[in-house]
Image (tube, rainbow, N blue to C red):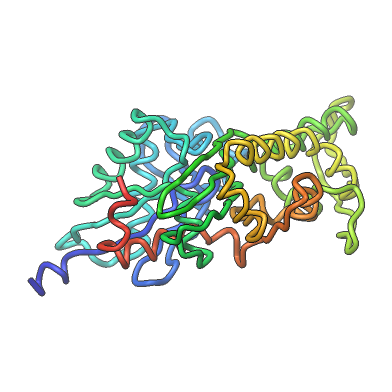
Length: 340
């Protein structure tokens, strides 16, 4: 049995729209953007992850960059398979003679269809997965932030990722009610691109808009500790010449307002669907924010004002889901019934 254990590698994968994270031997060994660059003529993979992200929006005719996931699900099957393979190779680049048997636990959005689920499983199997399990993102996030999901107590998780926002009420190791909406980090980035084009006549690329979101992204027009204004470079739509514009956090708060309102509506819908006994628990426990979107300044305060409930941002929200996936993998016997 020992030799088989030696040949088996256990990986916990958070296959996200924006970033892919892999845990191996209790450590996050891969944390890369979910993007791949390919040669158009030969179909050969030129770069994966960070290297491909540096090329994004800057390529010539011979190279194209692909983001294989859209709205939390696989949009380009072949590119997703190549990306997973490439990221697994990053873990042990030297080991080629005996490819390890891979046992994977991959997290998936709670609103995913059977067809989309099958696409994730097929991509993982083609990338070398011999045993592939899937766990829902809100459940993985809850485990990752230290909630005992088996208790008869209601907890609400709001996971704002790149492609989807997952809202779920969890009790007795199951999702009692959930809302999955395709408004999340990517939508915020698009809002910023559109706002800069309309308000400042400035054409921005995806990476520049992402940078604005990180530097001055805010959910409130007034913050106690405001970030400094941010200078952004782009192309002037009137003259076609590069120019620089300075933006403030309150401007970005206004442009993100509509998308954040959609997330608030989804939270209120999920609260409406919650059984009364669990509502009583949530009044005590509050709401937990995870995912990259949780880092937007003032978002916890805004949701707290809307719901009149306490809102907590998880410690290291970007890695909460992958941490939970790693814990589920480590204790696979305990959590197996949560997996698909």
